Image (cartoon, rainbow, N blue to C red; front, top):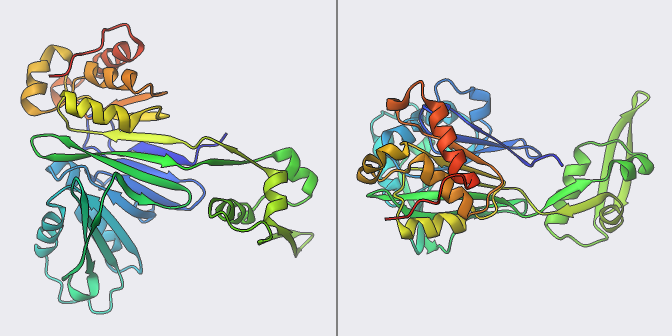
Length: 339
């Protein structure tokens, strides 16, 4: 089964946090946190449709300027989600520049400020110098964004300030049977994406799906019914799940939220700033140790743990952080106890 999400850390385990997730079938991408992006390909950044910021410490937010620089003159819309204060933070960043030559620029940024029980949104248009247009509040009950293919969930965690943890959940994975497709006699192509989208939208069985392809120098077409294609070609399986957690205290309240957020994730991306030997520093700075990251992964029964966001004090010792997290995850080390 090919994964729907292609996730990669932007800056490696010692660099600024940032997770780029390509949506394989949609030609788009999501970004979790905005650490340094200056060495990340512009073509990949320009695929972004939604950005999710855990909090605005500089190593998680410095890449915002790179985003604006690339999108500014483009006909594009971008949605950004962040914790309480994100509207003020974004407005402050934008206020640091002069916008007298942006008449007619079509780029639109929408910012969603996530509170425990509500989400307040504003629109900022490049053409107006990013003047704030208030869109008002709406209830928030854990889901930031939902579409037919996937949803993004969030929880509020304690980092001495509110810090968001995220989960990206595919609603269902739709697999095409290669043998059935071969018997149908129509080659794979963009029409399969249209078929999957129609299934996710639960369109009627008599919905027409038009397949187009080239053969012997000419375009061929075939018109088929959604219900027939679904029954012949498509197998539905559980969707892919990713979780992303950074900068948080290993407290009972945080542990309960993280375990629920990351439960049964295919991949759990979790910060591991310190080794267990330096747990006093982790407690003081409201960060996790590698052992604590492994404990969270074990409690959440995830399939794979990816630790990152290592302190520079461990430069050249990454293997120790990986090994400690793996030992706690596997059960070789006992589960850590929250404070």
